[in-house]
Length: 581
Image 1 (cartoon, one colour):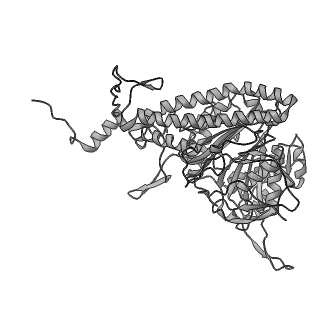
Image 2 (cartoon, rainbow, N blue to C red):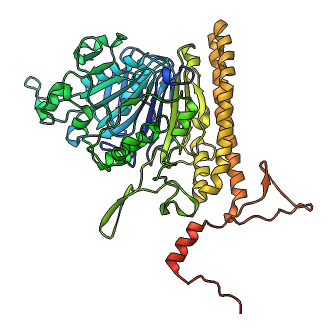
Image 3 (cartoon, helix red, strand yellow):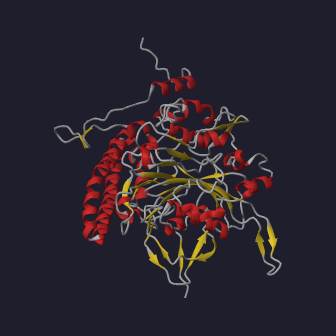
């Protein structure tokens, strides 16, 4: 009897085949030499208007012979087909497995005619399957490449961040379209162009990279049998000297389609398969620029490129050497970027309203009086389902070394909680299937964080100091706990690995539950403090009363001078209060 399983939760994604920059994801990649403690790190934000934030968990499993995996269309939840299950799959916590292999993604779309309508593997299936089947980043690349070749690729252009405790890679790919032919023997139709063209590059040690919904790999070293290999020699990917791997037809296919006519050495994956336009620069590359500018003093020269002012100017490098060593907390802060400190700061223009809200409700573009306008698309956004910082450490046993710093909802108002990759379960209130985007549960982590976030959106610059105070308190505490938790788990591991994993499970589950409890309490505190637009008096979280127990009078923060000027400009003398005779 065959066994059928699902690859994670069947979720309806807002983005299907083609992605709009409004529904987008931002990834950061950090190598060992660029981190403060020798970790590798990747980050991911699952941004979608109907993405539910939950922490997927899949235990390691030996599968009976003949077991099958059902693949679902992520935009409709429609079953697409089945493939044979691997004999053994690794445990996964979110998109990180028990061997500290982690994967993130961002969709860049690319040439629309290259979508394969017959493909079986969409990007989400590739992520789930690769983390379940790969022990290293290199093996994950091989798994992805082989799955696409055998079953076809069903999504549009995609960038993957792939990391393990020693390396981080960026892999970019796009389908080859649909060219249906008839098999002369069976009479069945098949796609002559099944599969994808792709390039994978290892980020050099000591450097950082990023991608945000536009293809970033341009030119790359072509096959030399040492540093660079094609998919014809894919088994050589495990040679540590190999830094570049690409599909054997990535150039020839482009030439056959008329996309490229130059010398092979001049071939640029991004320019050929995802030609740059204003939206790709302003909505996507600007997010990369904004992360890079926080770790480099040399990014001003790319301002016009990233803002779309000069699309012919030099493109940003794929990776840069940071001017300081980075921690997971740095990446958490990068996730909260809304171009603050630049002339495009989202909290400063009229669209921010009277309370400096650095968000704009969708659509991303809008029209007025026959002219099209746009809103900025920044890293932090209200429609994030979940996001994470995957931290991988090669000096510790895998179950202790990997930490999935995981948060739900808007990165600006979330708390990143440490979930070790060796845990045996996740907290119920964070778990897959505990509520969904149409099923409200009062204690589900996603809904608890959304309630605080949506209240903050009403009075942003008043409420966020209180939110950031609690957010910082929790994230700082978790960072301070980590060395002690590592040490205790390592000591247990030496004599009883099973007990060590149970210890890590208790810690991660307790911290997840504690965070939800604290955030519910924060939401209740904020409602009382800022009820009706007033501000109650309090000290250290305790509201003040007079000697007879009656509440001390609230303050009335009012509005900024900028808001007052706009009201006067709009209404003239309507609200002028007459002076006394």
